[in-house]
Amino acid sequence: MSPSKEDYLKNIFELQHSFQKVTNKRLTEMMHVSAPSVTEMLSNLTQAGFIEHTPYNAIALTTNGKQLAENLVKKHRIWEVFLVNNLHYTIINVNQAADSLEHSTDDQLLHALNSFLQFPQRCPHGSIIPGNGQGETDDDDLVLSEVETMTPVKIVRIFDNREFLNYFSKLNLNLNQTITVIQHLPFDDSLLIKTATGQELTLSRKTTDFIFVEKNKDQN
Picture (cartoon, rainbow, N blue to C red):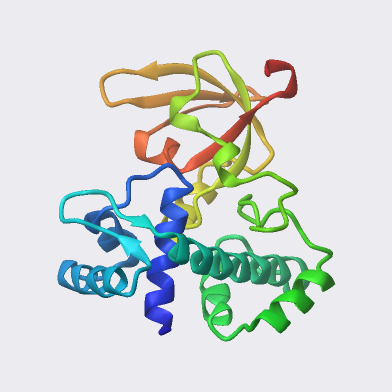
């Protein structure tokens, strides 16, 4: 399978497990490709039995597509762990390098690298590594935009997208940081949050849809 097809499957997987509706438009924006290119590729992937797709409806992976996408995502996230922990890449610039490496990684290398890293559970962006999560999946996380008012939560994952990662780095927020939702602002559906140090931030709905949290243990 071509790297281009693999990238589509991986991005569809990422969107599905980030509670984002997968559409032609969303893939066009995320992958920086033209709408006709997306339409053609989705048609090819449908014919190959990797996705289910009808015009104007959400796109979903088939069983075969999910298995292949999970393997690609695992390779990508394992390489991210290696690059950040061993070669000191930042979480902002690691994505592109991992993208290149995943396509040339066979199962033997994947197993060796996973073993060398002692089977890490999460990638540097907080996403569960398929097969390493000890029963956990990304689906266990909450989307920040849907957290109730006055609820303290911990940031456990951020969406692995270069543009968003660059933006997130400027917010002075970090993984494993505790924040509290102060107010949902109805005018534009933005969110007012407060950090443990008292800093208040207003985040757009698009931003809060890309940040994933879990409730503090005493909140469950």
